Length: 471
Image: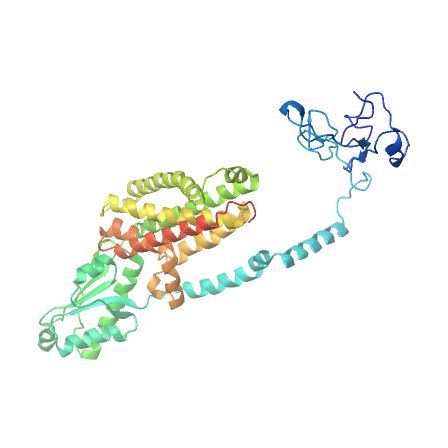
């Protein structure tokens, strides 16, 4: 080995330095002319600040061999020795701050410093500021409008087979009460409207209604109420009795109009457990499926696993489908367990088509899983993913899906907003299939809405799932 050849990383104290040499106080500039008759050597400009490095004679190695790094040994690449990192390594030692002095139990200065840091963080982070100020106000306004226990604008189908002034006066009394709204074209049977969920009740005035009033006999009218929603059905029954009493006084009928032949369809006993369990099925599966993909993928972003996955030639849509498919199967298995428990413990019937319900469940889970994946792509942090999942999954499923409060009783703005929520449409499908036994023709509208929302959410997740590592 030539004694003046040293490692490209610099100084004579480096591992690549020539054997037998020692570091001296000779300036680096004086080393340029240390070998008379030779051209001056180029000094290495690396972080090591070490000795001279000879200019290479040729960049092509003889015999086609791989060229070595400048001034380095075969184990070095690009003038730096190969290794896991070229950063300084302290050998596992931890250096104490402030010379290793003791730390007191409590310090007002440190607490004030932390408070200042938090203030700066809130000022620089709009999301934190919105979560601390905007969201509580939004929730107060939201609950103030939605939590209205008065059921209004009940869709009522009126069938007047008597067609007399007395029968028309009775029908007008229901409309004038402010609780009922006539709905449904005359050509469509009332039974079909009830099965499709387009009306909540039906009023049937039979022939001879006016004659019974003239003879002083009890005037009868039949009322059919949708009992799938037991809470609304009970309220409707109470409204009907009150309106019938008001109509009797208006018509001067004594005894009053008798509404004894009242039947509840789809839930004869008004069992509230049927209503609650079918609603919980939608809420639980919706929230859990969103959290599954949101937290799982966000954890991959935090741990760096997503970077390895993005280095593969997989396309975004392929990645979306590959991630959704396992969770879809897992959620379908959970759906089966939930209904098995509902059947065994609460005796919830199943009157519809199992295949149609499976298709509707798949569409709903595609919506929620894609929504969770979209949240994880946008946040890339588990904490933020959890907050967004609760804000966009739990609250809408509880308040805007029709689980607790009828959609018809909400303000106009929230009624329009519910059309963009998958839980609202699957709630209608779930209760329609399980409790009413409705088929695809009767429930075509919510099915198409779910399919459209699934396509939109999967498309958005694929579009946001960029192949770069920057959010």
